[in-house]
Length: 137
Image 1 (cartoon, rainbow, N blue to C red):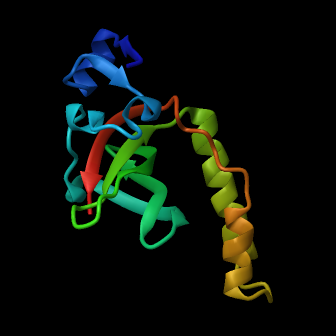
Image 2: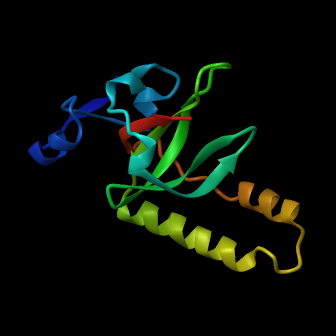
């Protein structure tokens, strides 16, 4: 498992004392070592992927724009999502893509065309992003 020691300030944000990345928890149950976040602490902004339910998107947590990614989806169990801390550049790119999406939707193209175009964009690689918490739906 890839982990790195956190600074004192970061350690206060993550009670485990270790920063875990999306790559660390993907395909494992390691997400249980990260703090659970209540829904009322999250402000959902938009979806970035939806297939048979939400898979990823953008949220605000404690005033910080974050991404979320599906990490567990096992039949009857609730879906679990990792909340990811983005770099300023990653956050800027997501905001710009969303701004462009908003400007283009409804400009004479059918909705399905826009969904297909959005899915064809280059998806960001968030595997090295710190997981700061998780929630379930």
